[in-house]
Length: 346
Image (cartoon, rainbow, N blue to C red; front, side, top):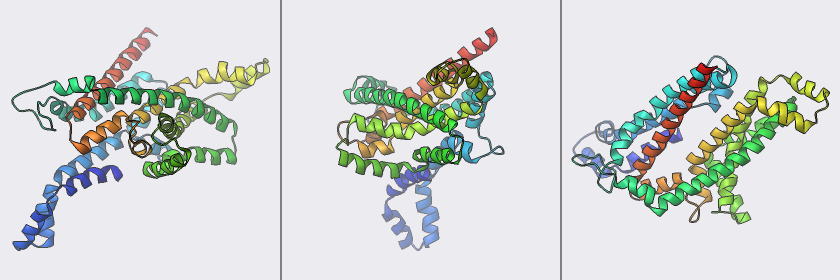
């Protein structure tokens, strides 16, 4: 609902209320003024809300995985099952390509033309194409600093989230009891609590600690929100791990650390890698909490794009979005080709 509310609010807030008042003054009833004036002027926001919610729903993974059971399976879960459980990476990669083609290439048809406009505002080009906004994206210090800050934060939090999330998942796996399940529910709270609530909580605490608007504070908030994703993916891999392998290694004289390093981690590596990817993407895309815990010193790429949309509707945002979409598509295609060749060689 919040994702639908934002574009709806933006469209409705821009409507001149005098047009509705004029329609009422000409004798139109309340419903007629709403249907013929207000609703029609709100149509771009309605379409944007529908597209946004539809795209986000296609990629939902965590909530359906927890609540869907065995009867309701979405495409993101299907990709995860094919890659992590059934180990049919070719099918999983193919499904991922289909999802990327639908989710990313469709917006690209709209974003890419806007990025080529010669104007200084968001507008579809008519007679002329220009790369000025791509040049601005790669040369303007504001945008390059935002890219580097986002990369530093994403790499740091991915490292922290993978370490803490993996260890937490292994610890909860060993605590196979009601207490362990209760502790697991507590660990997953950051992805259950709405981001705006987490943002307000972090803001209050960081003001008291004096780490508001610092890289350390942003990395800490992103790590707290990303670690549960690592816990989920690693727990999925641990669910199919044969505990007798660890018992055999321990009986042969291996220590707890050696069994963890030589037996457990190699077998759950796909879950760890998936968790790392989730954590990196979450940090790269996070905006709600970042807006609350950063002010002047920390400007991540999503926050820079947010400011560009809110203040001046800079077409550089479209250029940035196009570059990110193309990099994502290229990464998925390369991964699919590599996996396909590896399976054919096997």
